[in-house]
Amino acid sequence: MVDMKVTKEKIQEVLAGYDKKNLRIATICSHTALQIFHGARLEGIKTIGICTEKRRKIYEAFPLGKPDEFLMVDDLRDIPADELAEKNAILVPHGSLVEYSGDRIYELEVPMLGNRNSLAWEKDRAKMFEWMKAAGLQVPATLSPDKIDRPCVVKLAGAKGGRGYKVVHSPEEFYEHFEGMNVTIQEYLIGVRVYPHYFYSPLSKDGYRASEGKIELIGIDRRFESNIDEAYRTEKAGLTFSPSFTVVGNELLVIRESLLEDVFEMGKSIVEAADRLFGGIPGPFCLETVVDENLQFFAFEVSARIVAGTNIYPQGSPYTAYIYGEPMSMGRRIAREIKLASKENKLAKILY
Image (cartoon, rainbow, N blue to C red; front, top):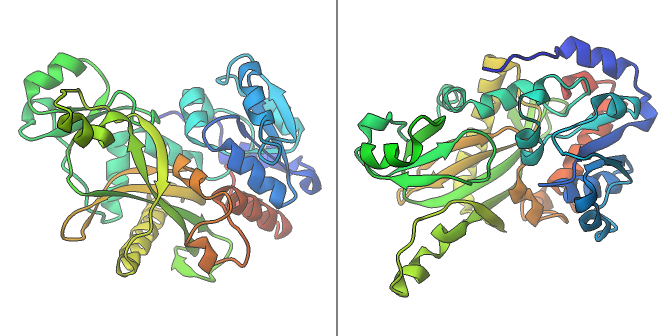
């Protein structure tokens, strides 16, 4: 596990110096930044985009999705924590922020939505599997290189969006490509990929109860992964290829209504296991699952923050339509939780 160099007490000390009437939401201009900025704008919260000069023009192309203020940097790995704190900023982590900042995310002295301990458990795949097993979820088998006796997916460490993943069938094939690398080997599951997006709020119990609060199902997606999703066309054309799992995009998914109980119970179990293991997971998270022909869910990853699959519904999903009387994206849900926590003087419950 990583060394958590900034304590929750230190973050609360920084937060105590904030002007709560002028809170801002900040994130790196990448991944889910457009919907984070757009959602905050709908909730009346000013935003800060940490951005390079090359990327700025992309965000300026979307007037309702760009930040209110750009904080320019030469490298997205250089998050100016002191300057963000001076601006009363709350940092929202997403996949790019986690990947670019590396272990520095655990020492940034600026309040962050959620629990950075959960990001450490996400990063360490052995701890991630411990978390999912503690939640009672069905998970694929994890194998050592010498025990590979079936198709397996080899996954690199970190939030890489599937880049570098590869299917291997034997120890020899594994060692040819991955010897000496920090990877996880999982059996290849056959089924439909289903990625539910949850929001856990410890501030309210009005809904699907979990721990001291509730979980909301904000949406569900599946991913388009490079050439593996076009495999049938490639094979029909008589071509051979090496499967790649790099995520290119996402599409909306609505599952059978009879499966919603399983989806909610998995989310609830993840929240309550997080409470026991490392102090909880307030805010957004996602389970990456496969549903087999028997309608059984197998979870193979947890993303302990907002995921890119939420970008498909900036005006709300088929599930938020039944919760809110207005368009609700994950970005807007984040902003609303920050507003509510500030109003009720409970920011300490959702920030670290």
